[in-house]
Structures are given as structure tokens and as C-alpha cells.
Amino acid sequence: EDQVTQSPEALRLQEGESSSLNCSYTVSGLRGLFWYRQDPGKGPEFLFTLYSAGEEKEKERLKATLTKKESFLHITAPKPEDSATYLCAARSNDYKLSFGAGTTVTVRA
Amino acid sequence: DTAVSQTPKYLVTQMGNDKSIKCEQNLGHDTMYWYKQDSKKFLKIMFSYNNKELIINETVPNRFSPKSPDKAHLNLHINSLELGDSAVYFCASSSRTNSYEQYFGPGTRLTVT
Image (cartoon, each protein chain N blue to C red):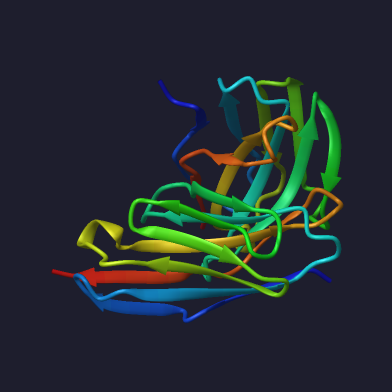
């Protein structure tokens, strides 16, 4: 069965304190690794798709990387507006998207 | 200029009732999904339609019935609601020509009392 595990569950950062979120996955025939951001009371917002080991994508203070077993979301010099829950999802070869439980990031000013 | 919209945003109802949630997307996507997010925040796929055809049907009670009148709409009807159905339900859409990136609606919080 496809499985996606995210760690840590929660992360509290001081503004400017860089850190990384981990997403480890076990899926049959990975067809994409996705990162989403979810704010309270809202739907997930798409951030990145990664397809192959070694691939990297960047958007503002966020950078996502992918290996054969895990993905990392690096947050560089975070600001309070980066506070959110970050969800990782892996798509297998049967079109299904399996989500992790998310990492809730809180950035204090 | 909402991309994926859902109605209602909140739904409070009693056990045993039947209710529907509607979803519409104006992104021109050909695939739509229903997800359930429980209290532990796990998002789980329930159904997926591609061009009005059911392509993913996870193990959900048959009290849940999706209907897609056209590729821009996917509704979810729930019969005989139970307490355990309380959750946030998200609709999403994607395009097979755009890397399967899924775009989510704002969610419908269903509370069954």
C-alpha cells in the first residue's frame, strides 16, 4: 500500500531561522511528488511537482528536492506569512494521490 | 474569479438526513476529485471522474454517491448521514495535459449531530 510520512508534525521557527521538512514515501511507480500549502480553513494550495531524483524546484523562500525515497522542503529565512501546514503527496501509477499528514510550521516574528 | 468552488461552505445536519455538496471548476480541467479530510488532517481520496467517467472509487460506504453532469461539475450526495461522516470535504480538479497538478476548492465542513 502506498504510504507517505511527513516529519516533524510541527515546527516552530523564529523569523529568519531556516529549516527543512521531510517527506518519505513508498509508492508503486512514482508519477510525481507534490508539495502543497494549506492555511487554516482553506483548501490546499499547489506549490511544486517533482518527478525524478535530483530534481529541485524553488519558489521565493521555498525549495523542494527529491531523492528516490524522500523529498525535502527547505524554508530559507522564513517570515511569519510562511506559517501554514505543508502537505506532501505522492502519485502512483494508478493516478491516485496519497497525502502525508502534514507539517504545521509556525514562524514567530 | 474562483477556480474551484464548492457549496455550501458549512453544512450542519442531523443523523439520518440526506445532503449534497456541489463543486464547479472553471479551469477547463478534465478530471475532478472528492477528498475527505478528517480531524487528524489526513486527506484521503474518495472518488475521481475523468470526462464524466468514474476512474477512482475508493472504499467508501455506498451511502456516498458522486455525480458528474459535465466535466466542469462534480457533486457528492450522501444518504443516511452518520456521526462519522463529519469532516471537511474537498473537491479538486486537474488536467492530464498539465502534469496532474490538482487544484483544490475551499472545502465544505460537514457536521453531523
